Image 1: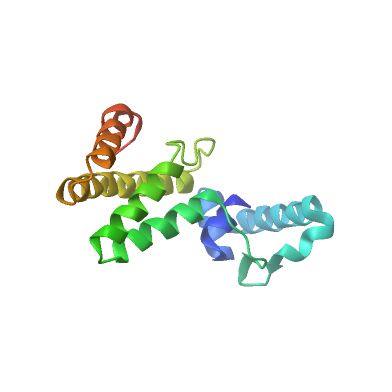
Image 2: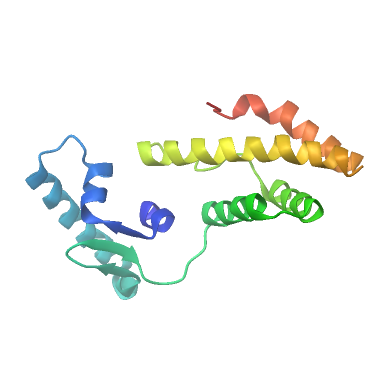
Length: 158
């Protein structure tokens, strides 16, 4: 369910590749069918949330989660040209950042996504620190500097 929430519409082939990469195709296809059946049973009255076709599986309802919100904010930060707006977005991101992105997920897809998000956050921290200095915002610069000092060893940056 978490994977579907992160990636919205996913082909059955991709789900098999992610969750059963070393299993023979026929067994992996069966595992996928069984897993989807279990999801439907778990959701019971809310099974309409899942849209399952012969090619794709997706969550059909609008939903929000912290990782998706973070991805959207990071994208907004990257696309914003106005430096004051960028710094404002960075402050918003940092005020909501808990440094425990996907901490209870150990599958390869989650570890890869976590690494990408942490790398993006690290780049944002560096850029926002420079912006805060340029825009003469010493309080923000100090907050970012503290985050960089305290939390950088916890991040798994490539």
